[in-house]
Amino acid sequence: MELDPLLLSRIQFAFVVSFHAIFPVFTIGLASYVALLEGLHFKTGNPAWAKLSRFWTKVFAVAFGMGVVSGIVMSFQFGTNWSNFSQASANFLGPVLSYEVVTAFFLEAAFLGVLLFGRDKVPRGTHLFAALMVAVGTFISAFWILAANSWMHTPAGVEFQDGMLHVRSWTAAIFNPSFPYRFAHMAVASFLTGSFVVAGVSAWYLLKGHMVEANRKALSMCLWMILILAPAQAVIGDFHGLNTLEYQPTKVAAMEGNWERQAGAPLLLFALPDQEAQTNRFEVGIPNLASIILTKSADGVVPGITEAAVDEQPPVAIVFWTFRIMVGLGFAMIAFGIWGLVLRLRGKLYRPGLFHRALPLMIAAPFIAVVAGWFTTESGRAPWLVYGMISFSEGLTPSLSGAMALTSLIGYMLVYAVVYTAGGYYMWQLVKGGMDDAEPGADEVGAHPKRPMSAGGPIGDASPAAPTGRDWT
Image 1 (cartoon, rainbow, N blue to C red):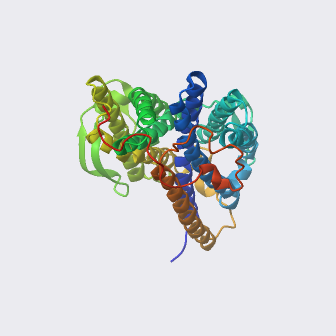
Image 2 (cartoon, rainbow, N blue to C red; image 1 turned 30 degrees about the vertical axis):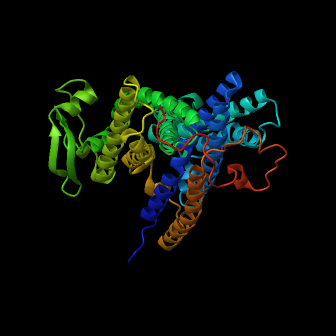
Image 3 (cartoon, one colour; image 1 turned 120 degrees about the vertical axis):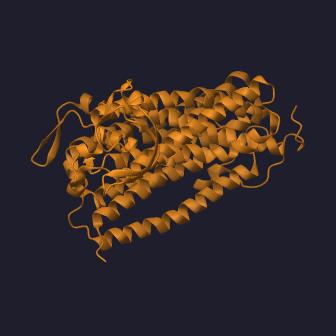
């Protein structure tokens, strides 16, 4: 069987980016949450805020480290598998990715050490400042990465000459047409991810009667965030979709499963796209709704997939179904926000019940939604690396063989299986062990950790700070 290096390289990049994306989207939101906790503790002196901050800083440290590892691998892939693309786009992507390292990674790395090991060793204001700088650093990093990725979808400010992209306007290239929508979409996704993780863990702790005061506060804060941000994400997603309709109409057509250009297009709830036959099987839809959403008119015209040449069409089934997974999970998040509000208004938010058992299950939802969203947008760009300018086949490393691509893909899978299994197990043990019941800083005086993973602290069962009974009221 002949091995296709292009297909294998695409699978490899999809595999690596899927593992990588879940960590930045978590750490961006969690870093801001830790900074907020530090600010509340600095202002009020309430030890509950300090306990929450200490615990979630440990989780952040592990997630941040795993994100850095996978991010480095992604950068290497540009040179090993996509060298033609790297050379052609170097005038823009080279500086932008360098700016991310210089302005964001150095800032995060410097102040993360103070945040992890400086509690009770530096003034409280300095420790708070370190938490704020780590949070700011995560957003600066997201800014540059999304500027680069958005430019690949909606290239602007460049000219293509002699096989090279030359920057004519840095402002236009960085702030390309899709960047504001994609950055807002990812920022809100990060806050939602952090909120659902903290809310799920807090609900689980409350079921166990562990650190009741602190986890009540955490649960309440996160449910307010979910209630506000989940609907806001739907609105931002709508604006993002309208922007995509303008600049990447074929992607939107694939998301809607709309093969022929038509007015009054239905919103398909279910279909089996058949790309070979250029049609759908077993369609179930709501008449005119796709046109209403995309054009704000029941008779609005929605573009069709067949308007693009067959070899320039994205993999429709992947785009169609990953989009529905993302949207479906988004509605589930909105439902949990409303559910929490109803319980709050009825005075039952802290009473154990189905809601508190269901919240931990929702921890996976934002991660799955993020990966599904990335599959939608990246697969929908196919077959272009830089939309309309550089195709996948043109960007591939010329000397890369199928055997080489398969070997590296298997190698990454094996290494990731070990690294992420170990990291995930360690993080689970941190959560399972519970929050430290010691007074803030009591176990840190004179402590100078020697190992990187010591930032996570000892693993073990912590003594609950409240009776283990389930009557919280």
